[in-house]
Picture 1 (cartoon, rainbow, N blue to C red):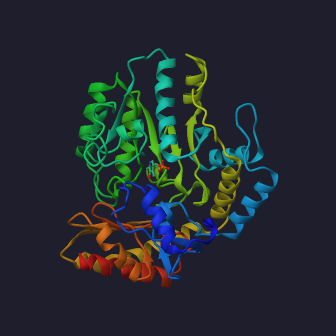
Picture 2: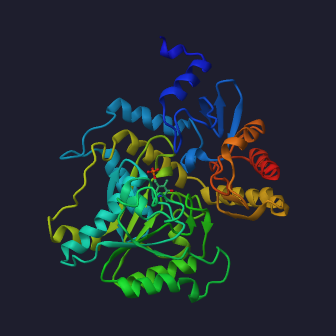
Picture 3: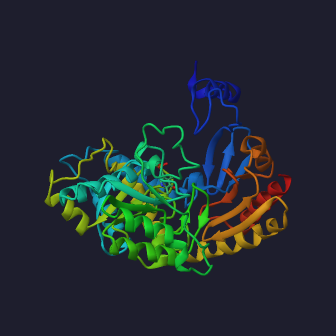
Length: 431
Ligand SMILES: *Cc1c(COP(=O)(O)O)cnc(C)c1O
């Protein structure tokens, strides 16, 4: 069968028969749409329809699709080599990217471990924390502390620190390690913080500091765990409490990194820096899977001074050259332009465009920060049933749980944002 000349029907039949989609059954009971190309902020379906993409392909394609600068970087790297192993070898794209990340992230982060996906970056962060304490002879510090409402990925250790109710704890209860869960971070971004909000986290730290290696959380925006935007003061207190109780702080900036919330990294809102930081998603502008785990000298020195004297991790595709080259181009493109202004403009448009949803009886809350706009519904959204309504309105929006949200590419213009937000409000009104 000529694979390059399939009809769309045949493609869809094969997809249904053989291919897993995220969190889906085979055959898939939910609709799936074939995309044949993507340019700028638009996805082109096989039937010729164009959709304005409100998701940036899971928050990664910050410059839009098929960007000439990123394409050129990919081609240039391909002409040299697409990849080379990282054990005993190095290459310019990895070194350039590492230096860029060290320069752009908060100052005490100086060391970079490259891996291939966000979940793995989280695994490495946790491994760093565990190895750090083990190397100091503090062998009891093997647990993690986290907050409810978080999401850190789908691998096993990452799953174990996802929200214990909405995550997959039930399903794998016999296998997942048990950690400590504090209340969901509060209050909301922009509301007044009082110490009570952090009581549950503080008392867990006080009771279990001898067992806790690290606290892991998403700064400011808990994304896939429930679209919670919380107060920077909470995060500031988290940093103070970790210091006071000798617990490392891991900030998972996989969703928030590279400008999404209006700061380059969301921990800047609280003016703090973590001991370990995870980056992923937007790092290559959505082109390839790549992630990074950064740490301070204290952490790297601690790991390397004791125990086995090395960080025990090394993925086959570590620091993939093609991905690193595109990441360099994407990050340089971002910081070479007034990206804050673009994100602020998007924030304003999302805020005004989504505001009418607040009046709907089915809507609980509407909130925005940076290039993130959220409509929280009263009930869980039946995505399979409603997906086509977005398509009909010329937009690609992919709700989850109770959330109809947009995280558009930073290059989306005013009229596209208007179509996008109108589509979201109209669909919310149907529910
Ligand atoms: C998406 C995400 C992850 C997991 O990244 P993958 O690349 O899907 O493995 C981890 N943490 C946060 C905060 C995320 O948003």
